[in-house]
Length: 309
Image (cartoon, rainbow, N blue to C red; front, side, top):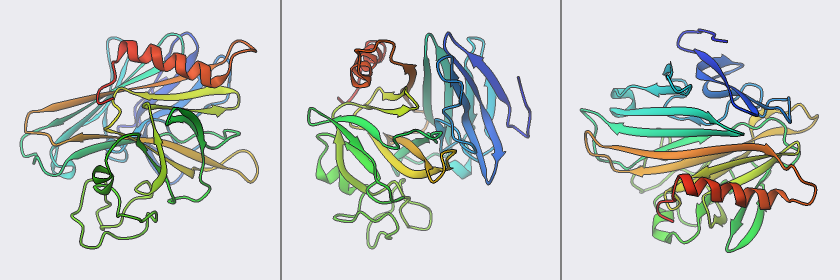
């Protein structure tokens, strides 16, 4: 099924267990959004994507009228050419479904003619979740499983990788400040700032860290797991209401998001990161979601060894 709305071309692709609709910008409610517009499993017929949202929505292709290509290998490329509006940096997302229950994203950022090395470059992806019973995520911190959820949008949203220095954190956060609405006073602007000098909701410290670049959540009994092939350059961040009103009365749809800091790019240079969604149901009654998440992470690292671990 292909639907052409401006460049909002959508492609339906499948693997052994998943059906996904992936493509470019479509106006859904008050949002213009691209990425994974629909995701369902043979084990859960309702979509994991919140109404009016999408998954792995990359900031460089969101609301920018990106190009959409169906590739010979069955993947879908959603990409935005370099230009003045994006600092002459090309953003290229390739989504591929892999058996039995994976969506792999290969993202490449390329500096074209006219690009400046300064500042460091970053990309982020939003995942608007459809009415999970538990709105938070699970991850490993200092060798122990943690569950984290904050009910206030813009407060204590970001999780940093375990082991990074306070100096690196300070590049993203005003020291001792957990309020995302506070302007940077006297600090050099960075790529994570909004253009008006006020930080986005995600630039607020949760006080938690993750030992490994993955997290998972429980979507109506399904494991929804995100894995990234870099650690120190990765950030996770959450919103309790980013996905809008939920179908469960009185509940909002959370956003389980992530960021990759690519760093400086010289003209002609490209950098790539690999991200995987595993969306599956635990098949045995004596197996826990956390055990399954670790097994899935090990499989991922066999294909994509972790950089900056």
